[in-house]
Length: 429
Image (cartoon, rainbow, N blue to C red):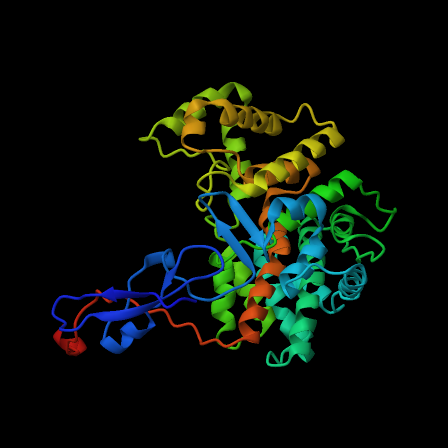
């Protein structure tokens, strides 16, 4: 915080309005406009792109410099040296765990990986061809009906139990959504496996034989979860906070986050990458589509290049590229036409002056799409996996808000409809 103030002068008002300015530990100063309502006005900021709706200590982004910090730790250091569950601990509690704390945290997550057996029958209410995100919205929201012993959000213990349940059960529910869509039996979690290994076991295993999981693929999946764990006040996280500000239970809040993530402008980016590759269809057509992308009058866009927040580079992309190279080498994939298109597009983007000048670098969604496609995960599951990784970020922000002082969210509006008018009876219209 600081003693700086901004002075706002408005035509027709005799006195100027003084507004306090706050300074965070990083980032630009923030003007507090809360007192404007007492003067009969408020600000107009579509999309809240210039508005800080909360104070947080969890994640910091500097898009201009390509910086992403979780509790102060750079994302590339966490991706190279940590793992997903350790990063979960960091996001939830603010510090990296000791060895004993990490072992206890991992053990507690493992203790919550199974879901209530009756949830199996819940899936039967969905069509087999339902989108997995539609299923996840319904099933995660329904967890409050199965685990209503941890819904007293004013109690620290209940918030902790709910956090563990959500982090532990999301991979189980995600894999169940996939198995249901293809008519295969659900696989119970195997708590001798790591978080990422367990997910791959539940996705691709079957009851007839033991699961064999490649360490390279498990590491790549762990990195996908880690690199998507949190991303500050994005649309889905803001949705979770807004829902939580009403006092809604955590399962309902996370279901709301899943619904927001489902939007193609948010969580569907890596799915859009694969659809773009399918549209291109063949390496021989790449030059045609690159030319279209450069044509400002052509609506076609190359998906997976550049980023709305990162104006320089996406700090997650370098790590994800390394993981993609490792996965492709491990699987020995050489003849997949879509992956061949992706590799050629990557080469062009890294060397073509047009892409370099406009900073249209391959982003995290481009490389995660390649990895998931190579592993054999269907496109419809891409956003579900994003949701699994992002769950800890959602719950960390929800917990931070509920643990402190907060108000129910109530955005205002610029009304442009009719002024007051009198009702006209039906026989006189």
